[in-house]
Length: 308
Image (cartoon, rainbow, N blue to C red; front, side, top):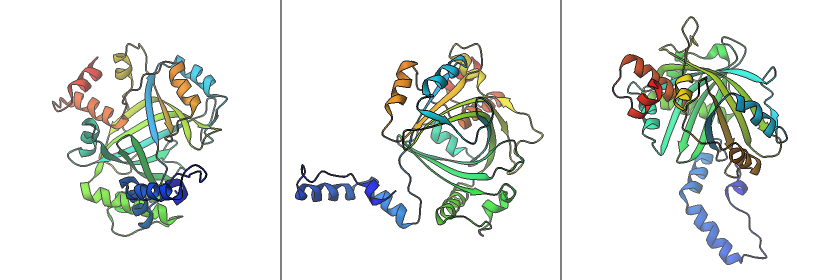
């Protein structure tokens, strides 16, 4: 993000130069602006603020929404088939006390996730993405670095050496930040998440995305690089949708946008009377596994959700 993006523009004919100076100084003193400048000085890639909204919908609604967004969106080029889909496999890391899961469960205002993601059916040709997904109040800030599939290992994360050549300093910085957080909380693998995603990008807006996630599954793991091979994948979507009165597996609709949400996306939510719901795939998998293991620490609402 450039300084021009970080600060608003003014109409000189309407606002005096003195007022402009006062307003600019006020913005430069703001915590948000200081955070942007500090991250830029440290070499971090500063991203535009993102916002996400999730909805659980019945499968028949997918075709209707797909038709509604057709004038505004185009298929994700990474998908294949009709509709365009691809497999997402995510390795979720957490501390031994599951502190990242509990931060989500307790709705901490500032929290993050550590995840390692690949696309397609691993092992494959797709690279591995090491991601830090932060939620700062209602805003999503994500950084990630790409590495070749064969380079991913526990040693890569635990070692003090950088054993990968990166395309940019931003990717290397994101890599080092990921390693720092892993060491700081003693993060390790806990659960693999796998699902099928159908994705679309806006034709008109700087950033607006619509995705449908189906066939949500999980697998407990302590392996850094097995990617679920030889293990049993268990469904995590059916209990939630049944709790909403559906007699079938639901689909997770996700809308991603910048702070200036496009009108067509607002119309989409209103036209289909969509009700926003929290849906963290990782925490849902942890709660379901807790139900099987009889973990009494699981929240009451999660017990009701998963036992319905």
